[in-house]
Image (cartoon, rainbow, N blue to C red):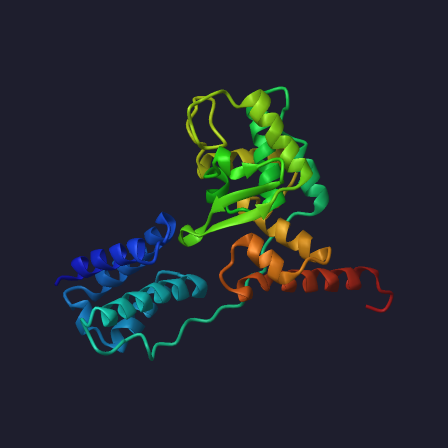
Length: 290
């Protein structure tokens, strides 16, 4: 079997048996295709640890950062685990290759004042502004990923009980509480701004098609600039803000993990580092002998 054929079988396995999302599959495809291109005529089943190490060195020569190189190596490792499962080979050449290490990058987040200014920007006399206000309220109230936000269904939002049901990574469904302000904003949107289009998707364009994540990203950046927020803002920054503000006010780390849809608690623990760094800055600013 050729290298491209093995890759195709692996992607089918990831999509059907592992249930990975289209975005994750795209990342695997990109990283492994680059690895196969680097192997050239060498069959993936004949590769040695030195081939994998050479691939990593090649990545560094392209200016790839350790975090991105580690992601690429993780994709290649997963590919070889699949080949072992398929009995196409009996040794994993990635087993002795060390994962590139990088310092954990602390997530950016907004202050509560920044969030308030951002929420004040949409024009509530305009249907698009009402929709945008509702989307920002929901994003900050729930910490959803932007793909989860634009994928919300009308029947996935319960305004009486105050929760949303979304489909996250790996097609895993989770339920997240929705606060009073967000419920009110969505209720206003449904009553006064969302035309009766025959669509199950909650947030729509003026033409009745689902709003995509790139368009929402552009809208959000426009409001941030209008609000005078100089930080580089994205939907994920609001997700970070959601988690950081909850933990600052005493929320349980496990509860925040469940709401964010993190598979591992270690992924959520990065926010405790954010809070520690913030406390250090407060101490340095206000303690007389800091």
